[in-house]
Image (tube, rainbow, N blue to C red; front, side, top):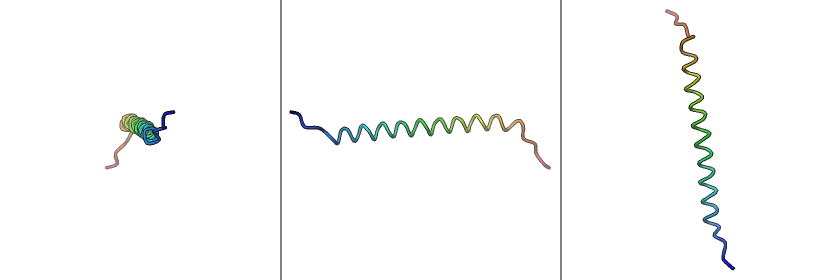
Length: 47
């Protein structure tokens, strides 16, 4: 019977977790950029 390679499985989990985190961060950042473009035209300057 083959020995289970726990280090490989752990590395795969870490890669999946990092990928998911990066996707979430890029989604947040793209959402912020969209909000900025919407907010800018409505702003009024005091002066």
